[in-house]
Image 1 (cartoon, rainbow, N blue to C red):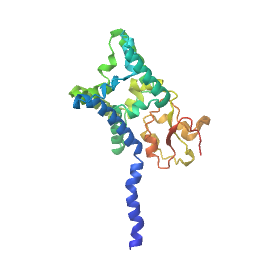
Image 2 (cartoon, rainbow, N blue to C red; image 1 turned 90 degrees about the vertical axis):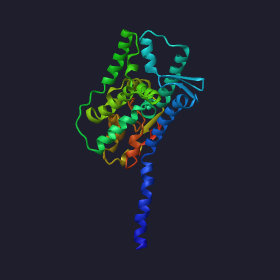
Image 3 (cartoon, one colour; image 1 turned 45 degrees about the vertical axis):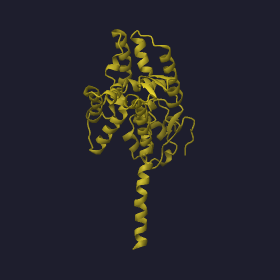
Image 4 (cartoon, rainbow, N blue to C red; image 1 turned 120 degrees about the vertical axis):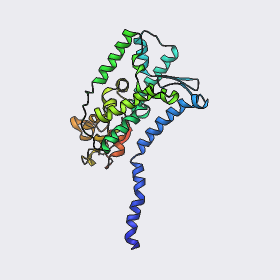
Length: 288
């Protein structure tokens, strides 16, 4: 009896470890997002000013300025030339995301990402189908339209409705309207367009995609020979079209996901049951 029960007990004890391993990048992303917001909230909540400002423009430890490129572009378009610190800040951000992280801002920093992840989980959990997804080019058209509108109005028009800005404002100051913006994105992804906001609409995502066309940090289908076509990676990826060529080696494509739309969120790495994918760098081109 004891010997028969031992393998079952061992398997049961191993299951939590396996589940934890399958969520390691999700946990890392949530910790990253929480850490970023904790640093911003320490000032207004506890009087400890590690970071002053917001995700649009901030100053860390009174020394390091950071400026969101899309926000600065709106400022310039609206006729307001930024100060020297803002220009230095945007240069740092462009270097960091352009050379290292790419569109990782969307997966590792942006708070809206948590809401869209929750909407996708609920869609899968309750097997919700339907909805009408807009074309992926919409976000680039919207980016251009925002800059044109800023030039015509003299205002940074997107910041009035930007869910990222409004979510941070809601966490610090409260306010139903600010929370409503995040709720609207959640409902949009849940009922209207699956993975629609991050993958098809958000102009900030479009801006970071344009900035980070050749970053260092990437996901690669190193073990593509193990793929059993389960489709789990496509189901969770906010940009599933970027997975096809690396996994299937179409057109002689290498294993690294080089598409600029990839958010380096590593959802696909977590869910792959055969460990086809891994988080690595763009020069890791070995395939087996």
